[in-house]
Length: 116
Image 1: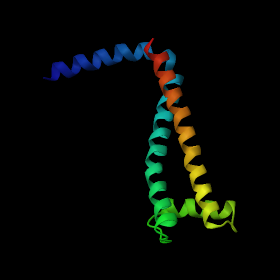
Image 2: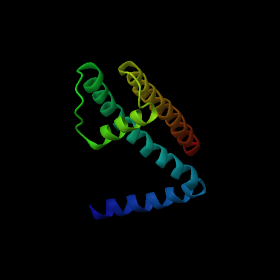
Image 3: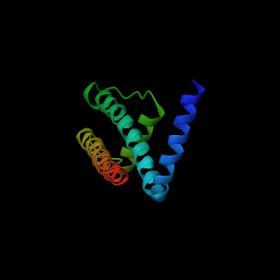
């Protein structure tokens, strides 16, 4: 069984020699993948907080991330009405979606470069 893993290690080393000229692209693709994972994880938290604040009219916050976004919205427009704050939250989520989409495009693009 150890022989099987040694042959896999040899194969991995051979493949690594082909990847080395593209190490910048590989690194950028890896960073973008982590960035997309973080953004995709934030979106449900923001939706939950939007529902808690604007639909159920609950002002309690459950976590640190929600408090950061509430402070950010208050910082942007401290005298905003309820509807304006909802609009700001919606725009923040839309901006996150745009960044996520652009990042996913470049992940696919860099992956295609690596695969050719």
